[in-house]
Image 1 (tube, one colour):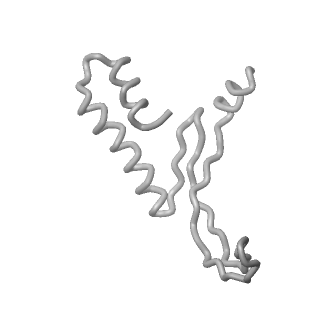
Image 2 (tube, rainbow, N blue to C red):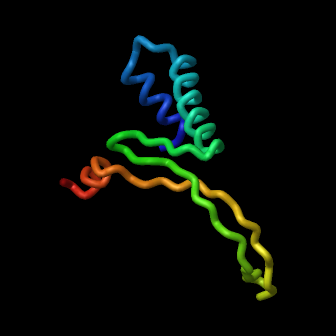
Amino acid sequence: MIRSELIQKIAEDNPHLFQRDVERIVSTIFDEITGALVRGDRVELRGFGAFSVKKRDGRTGRNPRTGEAVEVEEKHVPFFKTGKLLRDRLNGA
């Protein structure tokens, strides 16, 4: 599912809301999650999962085309851990 499909689904399920309001709601949710991760905070959606940021240390990598050693800088990457309810539903429990 992509963002526009999510917006469309929410709008269909809530006919009392205008499409532009649904778009604003979805954008606000994503902006808040992104902002929290940028600040280094953890975002937990009960039953769904938790978003956090993990630090990857710098390392020496290899260019796959030439085999030449390349320095890869440290970076922060988003991490998602599924909640128990989501895992159970995926596994038919």
